[in-house]
Image (cartoon, rainbow, N blue to C red; front, side, top):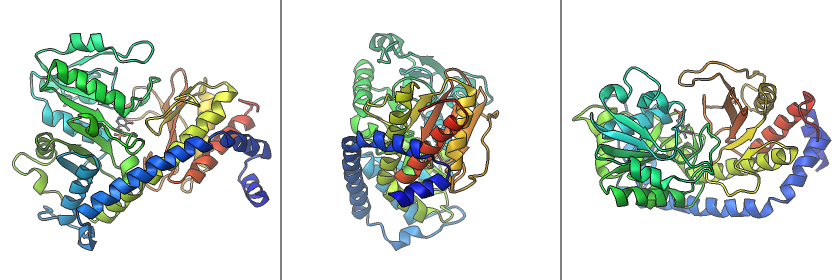
Length: 427
Ligand SMILES: *Cc1c(COP(=O)(O)O)cnc(C)c1O
């Protein structure tokens, strides 16, 4: 494809970098085919749920004010509940982000005197203030909810003995983070999550199991709610929004848990009946419809990145050949300079804000400086091609997203090009 090579050259990609990428791709055909099969299954799952719930043009109407009798909103929630195979779902633009969705799920289902347990190590950075691991006004700790944590074993495995010892009379809710977040631990597979939930319930059957499902949706054919989770929670500007949702979050789960979440989100007595949709329904439905293939493209990008960087001596989590359970790829770059170059490459591939220069910055909710590359249609959307990471050893950049595989590929090639141009790596 001489034409493409010429075009890429004008965008700054050298023939050497392009050839290096093509060579890596040759070995990835089978894995990409397997991803396409999962996407095909998930696409059918979403379409079937939309057909069953008779999605129709009236579902796309805007509602305002209280949002009473919002048939589109109610229909979308039934579609989510069917896809996640749960009794109920809360899918709202009023949920600001993933952290907000998780906060609603936790604070709705934990009362003073209850204990929250994380059996998979420290939760995602922003949740530390929510829980009160780092002091913050209005944390769960301030409301009398205690917290306990069991770390993963040194090999990344689950410490079942430690969990057995940590579950006590006060233990009310177990929070399981599927994706690694900003940690270098492995992401959990749905099967592993199922085993963990079964173990927890065998010790204490009435414990609620919540899964932070961020970045995991549609990567496998099953979701954590298929293997016993009482609640699965995530952000609509990640996987399930398909790049079209402009804000929002979801909580799918048992009727009892989701009802409590609705009372917490709006007000006791009001619950799920209120909440205008402000005209976002087309984007929410259509984004969910596109999500399985968007996630497949992002996953291909993540695998491509690992297969480019690992042979150059950078540790990748997951490693180049490892099976995957989310769309995040961590690449340990070893220095702040390399993180900056990588992110600047991703930024320069963007359809929006491509001339911006990402630099390390203090961010609310994060304890270290963070660098973020994102040239997104939706601010902060990380199902769109993006890279970020806290500036601390091992200087890992977390790469994710790409609404199309070709955009993800372009971004990764440009990131490598920037590292080469800055003398940080040679092919
Ligand atoms: C993104 C994410 C969250 C929530 O982050 P927001 O930026 O608030 O949407 C929580 N947990 C994990 C594992 C995440 O990846």
